[in-house]
Image (tube, rainbow, N blue to C red; front, side, top):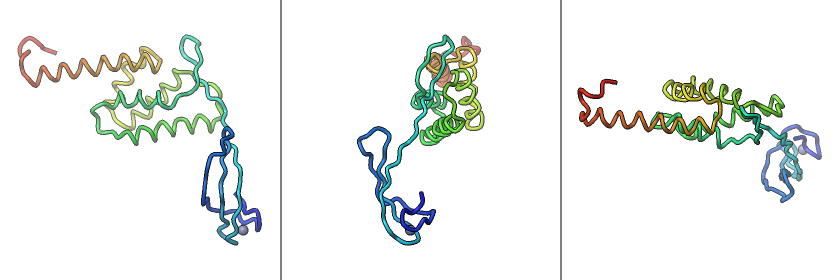
Length: 169
Ligand SMILES: [Zn+2]
């Protein structure tokens, strides 16, 4: 943002608040060159980002859905929530950068899958095995929960050794 007085391109934000009007933020800025202060009102351009589901239904992009899907896939894996949130932000920023209005749930799932591949192999496999079949984040989460629970039951049994000889899997 250019200085309103001298035109210097670098200013720092010294105060920021929402105006109450949708998407408009008031920023108090200070020029890094002449030190003068001025106020800007900046409108964030939000292009609606729509997810088209497999059955054709549309819903608006929901960052939280991506986060909860990934959290589920990363359950008990050494991956922080912060990291997952950052990936979700990346995914959203990328889609917005491409000025996409519509993204299919399948494509979105593939993007998440690719990110998980780099992040954690186990999480990736969990996600991929369920997602490929269902192709929808909501169905996916439900199925994944089952998958994770099943694994836990099995682990518990193995630990206790109670099922020895009977549980060959
Ligand atoms: Zn200036």
